[in-house]
Amino acid sequence: AYLRGLHVIRHVPQPVSSVLDFGDRNPLELGNHRDAGGRVGFLGAKALALSLMVNTSIIKLNLSDNWLQGEGAAAIAEMLKENCYISAVDLSDNKLGAEGAKAFSAMLLENTTIVSLQLSGNEFDDHAAKYLADALIANSKVEILDLSYNMLGDKAGEVLGMAIAENIGLKELKISWNHFCSQGAAALAKGLGANIYLKVLDVSYNGFDNSGAAALGEALKTNNVLEELNISNNRISVEGALRFALGLKENKTLKNLNMTRNPMQSEGCFGVLKALQANSDSSIEILDLP
Image 1 (spheres, rainbow, N blue to C red):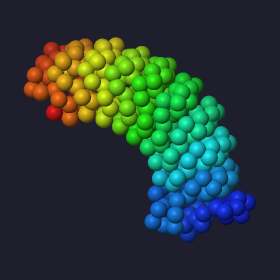
Image 2 (spheres, one colour; image 1 turned 135 degrees about the vertical axis):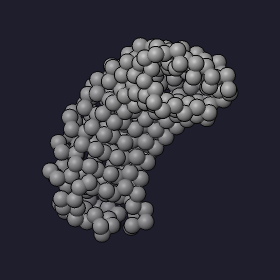
Image 3 (cartoon, rainbow, N blue to C red; image 1 turned 90 degrees about the vertical axis):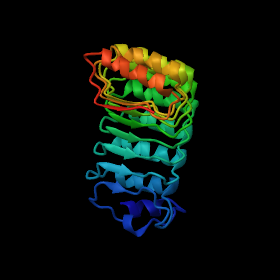
C-alpha cells in the first residue's frame, strides 16, 4: 500500500529500502533516517498516511526528525482521524510549526486511541499554543504529552495553564526547554493547582524565577495528585526556594523532586529540607538539590 501511495504522489523522495514494505511490523520506526537514504519529508508522509489509514497492525508510529513540516503533519493527522489502532505517536523534531499544531489539535478532537504523543522540538510558539490548549481541554485520552524544546512563552503559559486546569486525562507532561518566565509560570502553576490527574510534570530549563517558584509552592498546597516534579535550571534563588518550600510543608503526594541547577545556595536548600522535615505526611522519596 505504501508503494502504491508513492506512485500516486509525484516527486516523493526515494524511501529507504528497510521501510518499503512495513507489513505487520510493530512498532513502525522511521525516526531519524538521515543516514539511510534521506528523510521521509512531507510528500513521503502523505504516502505513508494513505497506507496507515487502513492498517490494523501498527500501534506505535515513530516519524521523528523527518522534516515533515506542517503539510506532512496535516497528512498524518488526517490519517489518525480514521486509524483507531495507533496509540503512540512520535513526531519530534519535524518543524511542524503552528500549522502542524492546528492539524493535530483538530485530530485530537476526534481521535480516541492515542495515549502517548511526542511533539518536542517542533518550533511551537505562542500562536501554536492556542491550538494545543484546545486539544488539551477537549481530549481526555492522551496520557503522555511531550512539548519540550519548543518556543512556548508567557502567552502560551496562560492558555496552557487554563487547559491544564480543565484537562482530565494527562498523567505526564513535559514542557522543559521552552520560554516560560514568571507570568507564564504563574499561569501554569495555577493550572497545576486545579488539576486532579497529572502525576509527572517537567518544567526544567525555563525561566520560572522566584515568582514562578512561589506560584508552584501555592499549587502544591492544593494539588494532591502530582508525584514527580522537575524544576531544575529555572533561576530560582534563595527567596524562591523558601517560598516554594511553603508548599512542601503541606503537600502529601510528591515523591520525586528535582531542583538542581538553581542558585538557591545553602540557605535555600536548608529551607527545603526544613519544610520537608516539618511535614509528617510528606511522601518525598527522591530529592535532588543543587
